[in-house]
Image 1 (tube, rainbow, N blue to C red):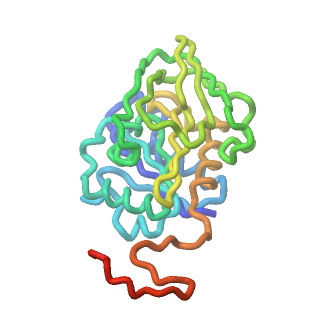
Image 2: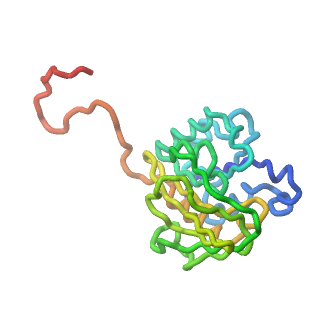
Image 3: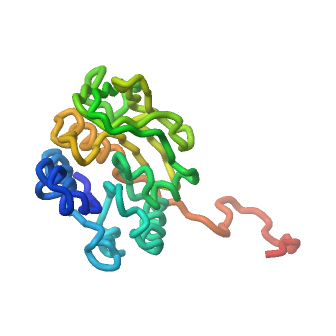
Length: 247
């Protein structure tokens, strides 16, 4: 069991009847429900929850994996909060970045690139191919995930080459896209998962929900040794009398 915080802008659901019909209690509520079904301890946080956007130091200290959905208000996330999340990821907190959160401050900071892509809204069919069936995130998933109506994302996706590409997508209009990308940053694991446009009921799809549960399991920090940095005492007996240092 991991301690999970699901973060969402929670703007579209309150401002658009179309989105509210699909996610009446917010995208975060549906994602949180899927993760609780996997036995995880889940809380939610949203953009307008105070100056920390619900992501205070104490909340992040109590979070093993942070799930991030954003779209219309990336610039409203305070730089100090994005920096705080960045430090926690480097220290070992897992991060799952969903759909249009490819443009979030935290993902762009971790990737060091524009994270730009092509897109089109035409309610077209998407087929996600499982590229690495033995990867833990693909556990219980078949050769493909079929989504009847989605927003298209197309290459080039301006991100670093993933450490592992778990899923790649084909769209009815002909484009392809790297839709399931795994990275390591510092001691933290990062997974980008493409599906999830707000006007389509994608987070109700059982295969998508299984991927989210698997991703939390994968991204949660393990029990390995905590890395140490800086000046180190020798483990073996050596002469440390060399005085030529400039530090």
